Amino acid sequence: MGSPIGRLVRVPFGSSVKIGVVIDVVAASDQPADKLKDAALIDDLPALPADWLALCAFCARYYHYPLGQVTTFALPPLLRRGKKPRIPKAKAPAVLPAPTFATATPDQSAAIETIAQAKGFQPFLLHGVTGSGKTEVYLRAIASVLARGGQALMLVPEIALTPQLEGRVSARFPGAQIVSAHSGVADAARARAFLAAQEGRADIVLGTRLSVFMPMPRLQLIVVDEEHDASFKQQEGLRYSARDVAIFRAKQRDIPIVLGSATPSFESFYHASSARYRRLDLPLRAVAVAMPTVATVDTRKQKLQDGLSAELIEAISERLRRGEQSLIFLNRRGYAPVLACPACGWISHCRRCAANLVLHLADRRLRCHHCGLEMAVPHACPDCGNLDLQPFGRGTQRLEEKLIELFPSARILRIDRDSANSPKKWHELLATIHAGAADILVGTQMLAKGHDFPMLTLVGVVGADAALFAADFRAPERLFSQLMQVGGRSGRAALPGEVLLQTEYPQHPLYRALIEHDYSAFAHAQLAERNVAGFPPFAFQALLRAEAPELVKALAFLTTAVEAAQNLVAAEILIYDPVPMRLARLKNRERAQLLVESRNRPALQNFLAQWMARLYGLKAPRELRWHLDVDPLEF
Ligand code: ADP
Ligand code: ZN
Ligand code: ZN
Image (tube, rainbow, N blue to C red; front, side):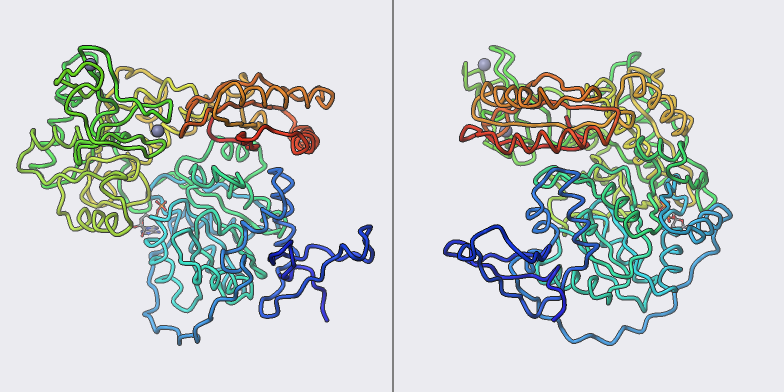
């Protein structure tokens, strides 16, 4: 019998039976023999490979999360329950026409060549403007891996984007076995994909963050597309960053990894400037299309029509005359962020969260965007009975209403999480846009990502200023990247594009950098500021968060945690005071957090390990929950 390490087992546990993974075998135990239980090997499932177990162990160590829970999380739900999916008989591969593709541009060739020559572990940052042909570079790098008999793993941020990419990948590799893994894949299919990857039958694994845990014996290349995207970080349970875990995995397997983006995270950009990563640049669009011209519209000097400037309205009219599409970007869904009573000062407040209820006029509801609480729009003020309640501020629905009024004959399409609330609706909306059956699109960041709209030649940006002054040190990075991505939607085909940014701060460096298309200058300036302030990537952070029905309890727990750290504190560790979170109440639970920081990652890790051992030993009050978030993205 071979080693049982990595095998799934059934173990009696109290009155029930649990599924476990054998992680080690020891000759003797310090437990009395009658306390030991027999574990039964689950016969029809193959052993998980050693590098997969090591990957889970790394995540458990680095994120200070129990190994058992990491392993459970990394397995598809069916295997977690010890069940084997039915494997359908292999279909004969469809006979597809051989793919045709354009010759690579010189920049693409150089990037492909460099990746092909990589020996062992080598992270690359593929920095290419939207439409520069990054996907083409990934596909060619994958092609050479497949030709050598290897497997490739490609991570993408959004489920919404995977079907589009799946189509492109399978058209390119008609003979290859491609499996996808994301939360939208049904249990049986997910388990089948996992086994196909593990048994080496799958050549390409394509998926969202969770696919970083697919076992792949012949893995030779990892690609992380849109590597800056925040959705690579899981915000609950095992709070891992799939991009960072992918880097670990490439190192573990001694293989190259390509991180690609038009707007790399400043962390990755920093590593690429400091020789930890190698930078590959695609500064030009693949097909000879100029980058869109970007200009600001100074909104201090005019009276806006419901948030729209005369310049933007004129630019939209011009597109209508020419039969081209416009996109108005406003990253706030709903009709208005709050409903208020001018007579008594009542505002629509969520009773469960420290947040306002957003007015949705399309279905006449007030909704909390944090907890989902909703109610009908009241006919009169609940406090004073005033009948004249007023919406304040502006969301996509209100903008849509105004555009309908201004352009009654135009076909206007709103795209946000309300209008595209299912994959089916989302596809219908995309199809409508592609068919040219819409003239004006109003939408949130849903529209910013990875879609080619050939008829789109104008992008108007409304209401972006608020994000310039957000407290989060990553806010400028996010705004810049979002605006660059949404601007990149325009002028992708034969028609040149134009981006109009409405702002009261036309001289702001962020907008100046967008006008110049100068990501690097902005990134360098921001990195210099972060260096002075001691923010990542110049420091490493962890957040301890606690939540309880009362804020004092959450804060008290964090204070105890600070005390528990006292004689552990190394010189290089900075522990801040416990503070309420920015959204201090969510679903009737009060939330507080405590930041721990160090310029030295091993010192921080060492500290966290000892500290967590103590915290797990503390008796936290009932009703209190806490967790640690290593490398947090949200504060
Ligand atoms: P990115 O991923 O950087 O946004 P894509 O790989 O999607 O860019 O390429 C953008 C467009 O340019 C696509 O329509 C693609 O087919 C096309 N394209 C990419 N590389 C080339 C090339 N070398 N020659 C011609 N067209 C190309
Ligand atoms: Zn009132
Ligand atoms: Zn709420």
